[in-house]
Length: 423
Image (cartoon, rainbow, N blue to C red; front, side):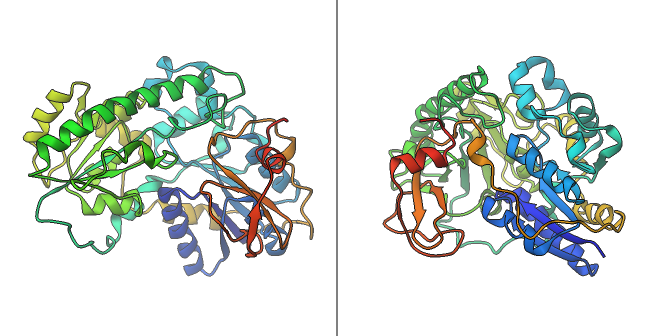
């Protein structure tokens, strides 16, 4: 029997799928471990010594190097796509640096045995524009949406009798390092500043629109705001007053379950709202995909958006069904069974033992010249094991992710080393 290690990204859609896959493989009697796709969990490989390793999509250099090293040790490597990336219809309108950031700047065909994609059109795009042989590309279906086919999480107590509208911001790049905002792109490429400018402009429009929306609808709707992962919530605090609830303490998936309508700026949430039979509006779109951005009715004029919102039908999807049909060519038909098809692929692999040594080669992150995308981070040095790492929130004391011991704030020189930037 092969031993299997699944490395999971932290984003909720990825985590849900990986948990479903983990439990399905356990149910089939497989020896399987679910780990975080972080350096601290890579060290478990020398203890577990898996024969099959599932990793998120390879877009950056160290991910490629890790997969390559696993192959040298005889592991069978499966790469699972976490996002569609871009639809075929959108490719003519994007720049070359953005296209390469999506499909990968480094050849990866020799680093993997299988690449899991969602639907047939996604398989076609990856085969044509990626660096993986089509024979290695396997369709598993609508991987990130399986959680919508199991019993939903418990409903939270509603804050009032009014219907709830969620403003899910989508400006993740607005607060990133202007010199290097997209880790998948090479240093100095235009996409770094282009995507920051686009998200910053979009957020400025939202910050102008939200107070007007609140004033017009606060008596009829309970209004919630949830900042995108990577955004600084401080940008919205002047709006989040007595009439607006800030809900960043729960996941987007859980937030969607509780609300009656969603407002976004070009997001996968539009499709998720459709799966839940809820209306959604795309206001001041920043999504560069011409299909994903058209799932919901689009508005660039605040007054026209307010007029449409006045007529919204609660309990009914308002998605464009023609766009949904096209999009499901990429996403795959949503049936909640992608993890079962993925488990079939894992169990169908040859029985082949790896030869992972007792000690992993020295960690190579310092050799990478890529700047960090984070602009506000704090460096910590562990007083117990000596490891160094970054956190995004300054605290008086934090626990080391390696050994659990309390730590002290590292000095600026250590922080520069940890971020991989030159001094």
